[in-house]
Image (tube, each protein chain N blue to C red):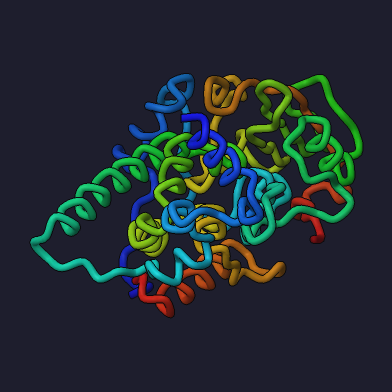
Length: 169
Length: 149
């Protein structure tokens, strides 16, 4: 166990399930991880793959930073990222020297976060408790599940070519 | 007739009218604590009986609701959307009858069952520092200890 052939992640079956929910993706995406409920899209936005960042009730096992209001409002999520990303951005395009995060929302409530690191070729999304995917456009995930992109945040990479920044929780 | 009416009125307003009548005492609703003492949560169900058929039918309904909930929230991050999903709420409303199915599903597939389990069992074995994985293990240990697994 553990030393055998790795289980293929990007299987036709897995792609079919994802495409059925996000038809906008078409075939223009790749699956880059197995399903893992230990972390979610917000944690992945901070390059964290061992915590589930969401304002959950007591006993939920979720992590939410102290000092940030425990609600799902878009303004709260912007506040959360402003701690690290500093500024809001109007552009969805790649900008030299900047990491980016896109917050999806519906009816004023945050639903999903996608990230664009300098070294990543495309946007990356952790789909709830399921897989990570690479996708070329933010619009591909817009729809009934995640609503639409409500805010882009950007943060200047401190050391060019260095590792992606991590949030210290 | 008039005398009988007076007697009836006197009996209603007499010195003992503040006491509950014998009928009221017989049919009063017992307090919740008394009910749970008289009818413990886990009543053994004899196989092949009407009760076992009802329990089996209920388990089928609960598993169908769980499947619906999983299907409709499979890519959702929002804890609020997950635990307030109508199918999840219907499972929770089944109360202790749903515990076996919930623990089996938690063991096999994980998921945000903490809210239903807290509300049904009125217990919370999860510590504030627990992550999702540790919270799941804490509930599974509780389930095994109380013979739901």
